[in-house]
Image 1 (cartoon, helix red, strand yellow):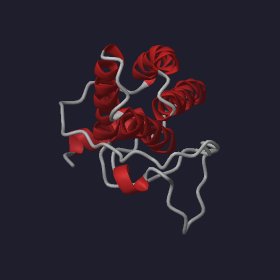
Image 2 (image 1 turned 180 degrees about the horizontal axis):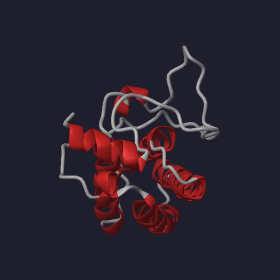
Image 3 (image 1 turned 60 degrees about the horizontal axis):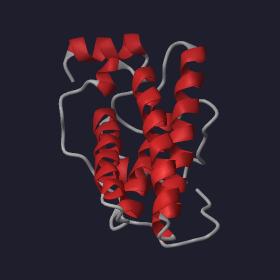
Image 4 (image 1 turned 120 degrees about the vertical axis):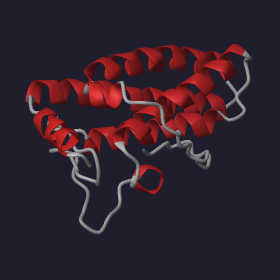
Length: 169
């Protein structure tokens, strides 16, 4: 990492590499967070861009009233938001709380989209996705520009989770 990038990251209080849990979101030392398999070695911009790319694919599916692929894309958003909650650290505690709240809301709404897709309920899926888009827009505003406005990279997508009516994420 170039010195300028490192200094920018330090000034912004953003962890640009490695897994570092934000306060209040602890994982046991030997326990990997659920997002680690997909995003453990990904940069924060890749994590964010993956969530946005998944949202674009869900938008196309909702417009076509199809649920094929939606569960995997919703899971991608769920995992990405949790990775961002765990890895993004802002110097202002108030800003940190607002970012985490927006990302938590996006994760919950992604689960609702996933539920609608798995139960083949296009109206539920569409309504949850409409709210998810708002939560992602709010999250984008609250993310550091180094993450939200980074040059495009290749997004990553999760596999669809097994259907579980408990949805314990």
